[in-house]
Image (cartoon, rainbow, N blue to C red; front, side, top):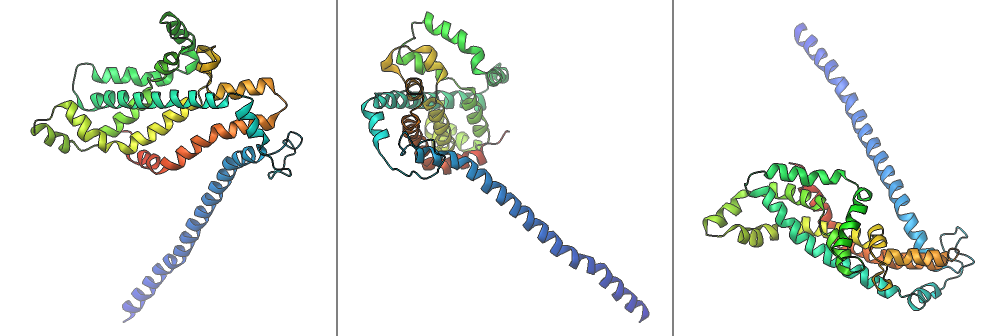
Length: 296
């Protein structure tokens, strides 16, 4: 009886700390979650506030554009009217859209083929070739700017759409990301297609590409955004005003009208709207691609 009493009292003593620790653990988890939520909210506000200020200031007059207020005291559309009537901004937008769209489509096709070959086909030097492609990520764009300009000049690509498109097609990041994605795909579907008589091209076109829609959608957004915001290479490779892209057009507007920030912010807002729309349209695919394409 005494032993049962001692056993019961020891069990009650051993269980009491657990009853005390559980609420503390839950409280710490809630505090950590609240802290992370607050941090995410602060970062979101810090990211969105400049965009909101840019859009708001684009509707302000020249006298009130630098007043520091978020909402305009005098609302006007004259800034956008000026951008589209006094400046060939529509031409700049069309140039950027054409160049970005062509680069995106061609790059996705070539990158997916190269990544599939590096992930599935067996040939001598495959790993060395992939390491060589991956090593180009360590080289920054300014390092290859002058050699690229010299090559483009020798090939007569300057002041042409080809000179703006062809050098931007190759991107080691796309090949790397697609290869990692293909390594995670199940081989059973491809092996079944090969047993049915399909070649590598048919397997790639009919099986691999349809399964790659999430990662291809994400890469399409990344490629289009990068080339839409291209500035340095178009500045170096073109002198023809008819080939001016949107970022160069905004910089030209800023050089001509340094104090007229209402025109500059209106042009920047127009240039940013397609990218925001593209991101919101494909944000689900971007998240899925990040989740499904880890390093393997």
